[in-house]
Every structure is written in C-alpha cells, then in structure tokens.
Image (cartoon, rainbow, N blue to C red; front, side, top):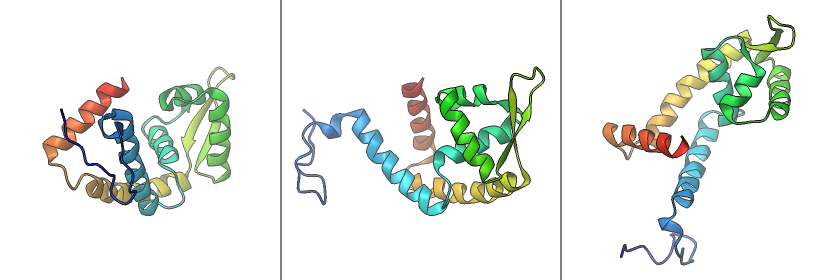
Amino acid sequence: MSRRPLKRPGTGLDPGPLPGLIGYRLRLAQQTVFRDFAASVPGVSPGRIGMLLLVEANPGVTQSRLAQAVGRDRSTMVGVLDQLEAKRLVERRKGADRRTNGVWLTRAGRSLLARAKRAIADHEQRVAARLSAAERAKLLELLGRIGA
C-alpha cells in the first residue's frame, strides 16, 4: 500500500484518495503552471497564446480547423477570434471558396507573440526546474499518451 501524507500542506485536511488520482494531480500541476504563466505573460491566457502560436505556424488556417485543433466548437471559436481581432492580434480573410475565412497574425500579433515566446521560454524553465531533461521529455510523452 502506498503511503501518502495525512494532510495537504496548508489546508489541514486529509486529502483522502485524491493524491492517487491522475486528474487531481494534473489539476494541481495545471494551477501551478497557469499561475506562473499569468505572471510571466500578463494579459494573455495560455489558451489565447496557444491559438496565436497555431496561427503563426499555420498562416491562413481556417476557423474550423483552428477550432478543431484547440478542442472548441466552431461557434465558441467565432467569439474567441472576435476578441483577438478586436485586440488587433489576428485578422480574418476570405478563403478560396468564399465559405471559409483564413486566420492570419497581424503585425501586432507577431510582435506580441515574439515577446511572449521569450517569456514562455523562461516560464518553461521555471516550471521544469525540478525535472531532468529526460524526466521532462518523459512527462511530455506521458501527457501526450493520456491526451491521445
């Protein structure tokens, strides 16, 4: 039987079976990572940065393909792109078949992303500071398997 601490530090509560649950451990890790990300890249959520990175890597990507890539429905994606467009970070252009829009980074979007990438590199180093390079690679591989 695995041993676990009786109380989570700072809470005074017995965590019960939570420490043995993957989802619980992922959520705690996500909260830690997101807090550091917010401090590192203020004003832009990890999700929005992820979308900008996808648009940068795939100029002219359609809204529907972008929605599929980030696991959102198309109607939600319209609102997200409206927000990014209002901030002048992306622009939508008519696609080849007139039924689709391609999404492109604007000059402001490219500039924000360049600054964000530098901050993200520092953030990633902090987040993985307790892991060796091999452990970091293994963690990414395992998370990829869980998410597949």
